[in-house]
Image 1 (spheres, helix red, strand yellow):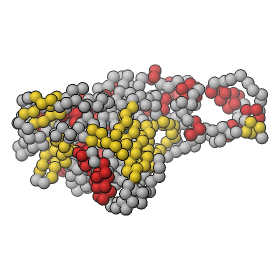
Image 2 (cartoon, rainbow, N blue to C red):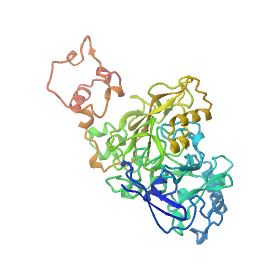
Image 3 (cartoon, helix red, strand yellow):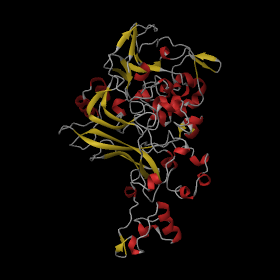
Length: 511
């Protein structure tokens, strides 16, 4: 794929909507949906008539009245503008976790590392020599300051409430702050009372630094999906139809999210009657198996996802920035685990072990339902002395590709002295799969789980059978060999016909 760069009056455009995909500078409709192909083509410079401006210095001193709202044409200075009529709503948002990021700060992850030292904001220089907005703050609904309880005016309301809004970083004194990017949006925009799918996807489809990198089931295709791509959103539903809101607190907590704002998600049973819509063989699963386990057989169906991230090596991504070597995959089969709604987490700077789990579901065969998960794997830097996983300084990595310096600076900024140098450790993270559900006719057949061990490891889930009973092999302890049966025939003969309890044959029991 050839990339064309058009230059005039120092405006440099290198596939700008793609470069800013991980930021809030473009809506999901504008962004590419398949990042799989590496772009190694030569950059061509041609002329284009753009407004004369130096990127990042776009008329910040002369705010334009570009919002058509409530019969007025108004300029925008962040939440300060909105406070004049919506003070209560601004206060609500400033106390929400979308703004405060409680649970993100102070914790490390295997994608973008450690927000405390990588929040930014600031400009990054690409290998093409262009400047792009950088820092974790590019996906924060604020104007660039660290969120605190007393800086409500730092909130950026339009990131959620105006789908055509674009922003970019500009120097204000000695600091970088987000300002409206007039060159990248219509002359006049409107405000939406509820966030659109595209507004949510501007950040959530690009978490982890690229298209569908992190979640695996939230890609830009959801901005305007077909029914085949997502049976719910393809029929007109929006994010907030299920992620209910209350005082700017939003329902939804994946297994890898530390914060629950206390608002209940809309349940599948609010719209469906699974006990009336399924036959007996399915109904018997409903108390122990989540709907998604059968109704989302694969994820990353529309856009591939990051399945492994290797911090021992770097490569240049399509945005022109260095990053760890990423392995991508499409049509990924989930892994399955019981989840009771609780989670375990690796605490930053605590000792880690090989195969360290960064986030994992709590629950077991007696506690919770069986859910589908994506299992992300990584190789991350590690301090042999403290056994802590090291936070990488992302700006150094992204701009220079010098992973050694990025590790050492990240260690220094988080209090690690590395007296024994550093090494690397394998890590894993569980993330729930909930979105991009195909139509019902693509639901898993019973045989895909019960007549094969390729999809579900029943032993790992706790469904082992006992080896023997009354001193004899299990089956022959009761009867002679019989004709082969499928799962349901075998199960019904023993449970329904013979009234045999689970623990007669298995290592567990259920009432």
